[in-house]
Length: 297
Ligand SMILES: Nc1nc2c(ncn2[C@@H]2O[C@H](COP(=O)(O)OP(=O)(O)OP(=O)(O)O)[C@@H](O)[C@H]2O)c(=O)[nH]1
Ligand SMILES: [Mg+2]
Image (cartoon, rainbow, N blue to C red; front, side):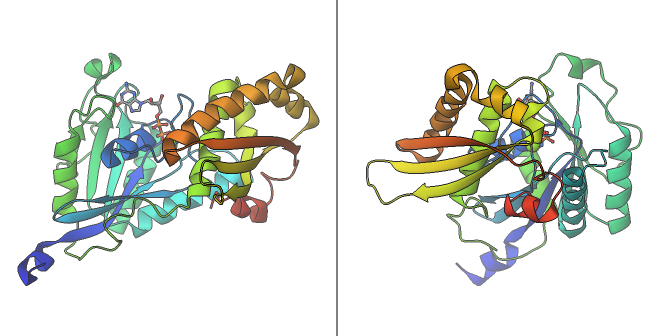
């Protein structure tokens, strides 16, 4: 690399912020061109910050997906909100995501005030512009000032994505690469696998149940050449929940396992033997130590 190109290289942390379900994880995956973060139709899917590394010829974007900010007294939610505040404080550029179908909310005011106070370069990003509802919405929102550049995109169709990348790169500080160019994330493979099991729980179980569940990989065996062996605990808070997750004759946990295995095989690009064990752990959501052990911090 010549001296000139080192000087003009840009790199830094880019925070993806916004309320639950705004489309943060979908945008992360679209920017990376890889499925790194799990996505569901339900709000409050993401539980921990996850770093996705996008290496381009002249720039490296360290994209931080975050949990959606929400109000609830539970210990887990408190931990999640602290994670968001920390990312907002530490980033070089902040993306504030607004679902074009739902518009500007009180939580956007809250995040905007924090980012302005911290003096962060800011991009207000309207998501889901492909949606039917997006067309009717007043855009940009009145709370946004002209220097807080506004754009609109669809992570599903890819519309507006190239322009967003340009706008982010313009705002990054000059810096050499901060991670090796072939690195995609700071998260270990086993953690990504646990997330894919969690995504299958959201897909297979109805209503609120997946919110009180967690997944813990207990063994990850790569010694065989033909397949990877994975054992995971699926934690629930009560015996009654365990019965639902296991299902009649084990039918439900089998369905969950098949879905999760398919997703993990796509991630690893090879065959997987996945065993799931449903365990009752009434305290996991209340204990800071347990939340940390599970990787949600
Ligand atoms: N039509 C459309 N739907 C989208 C788009 N981006 C995301 N979605 C959908 O919106 C829902 C929420 O997306 P996520 O990416 O999980 O949202 P999130 O902000 O990460 O949500 P939390 O992790 O719960 O805070 C999913 O059903 C996505 O498929 C988009 O560009 N267009
Ligand atoms: Mg998410």
